[in-house]
Length: 245
Image (cartoon, rainbow, N blue to C red):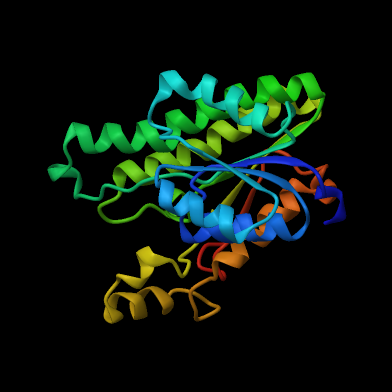
């Protein structure tokens, strides 16, 4: 991915397992990265570990501050924005009849509304450059549904539909907007699952294993690169065959 050398890329949710792997891969190909998240100690660790990286602590739930965040982030990168990776997201699981309005609204607000607003203001920057790429990280359960995750699945399915609409609106402006839909990936979250539940999940995966964060990062590299220039409004499913669209 030599064409990513020197490209300016914002990555949200950079301090988690998948985010960290995305940062590592982008750093390896020489991209200029602005990593953002809420945990300053994790961001400082990223700064120590990788060379081509800048960090900016930001809580994407602060919707009124997102335009300012994009402005500050692009300034740190030198004024231009080539690619945005929307990786940040949360879960607040509960069965539907027990799910509070607050649990529903918080997940929708952070996962869907904030992703829309970050994309909106990033697109404004990309229009000035006459090119750009946005990659939205969704989830397999946004396509299949999942027990106790009505809020989360709705937010992730909404990202897919939103991305298609944005892709239609800005394709002629040379802006590509796509999604990556991870299956069950080895992260701190999946490590907390008990063995029986983990075995039940693996039994549904034709590849018979959980994915690695690098599997997602490799797809991000592809969608950021020129090699994906004729792919728009699509979702790449990275799930070991658990869901086949």
